[in-house]
Image (cartoon, rainbow, N blue to C red; front, top):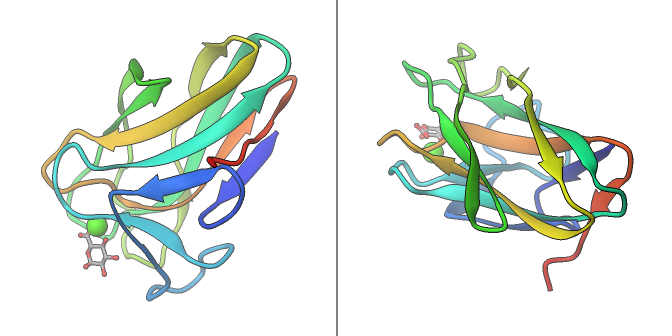
Length: 139
Ligand code: GCU
Ligand code: CA
């Protein structure tokens, strides 16, 4: 399994900012999308063995409703409407639902993209579990 924090290898960017103004995040902060549909967070990974992989996010949602996201692999939507329910406050972090996908061997981009007008919740990290996966520099 690999855990990718903001501003480390495999974190490619956010349509917004990397912030640190709410406590209890891991790493140097969290990815905060500007609050508009279509904004997201991007990562890159290297899969050395094809197989089923499980994606999960550590996030906070101090808003008033779910902030669902679509999951894109290599620019193609592979899972729609992953749920990011409210966590009670912006400093209360939770693990999201898991999303299971088949990934071929090779380098892949991963994008979580907001489907509601509120943008995403604040995203602390993505965890990808499976037989053989690592973070890949975005270059
Ligand atoms: C607040 C909070 C941000 C969050 C934003 C939002 O401004 O401080 O961290 O991203 O709400 O609603 O998305
Ligand atoms: Ca935001």
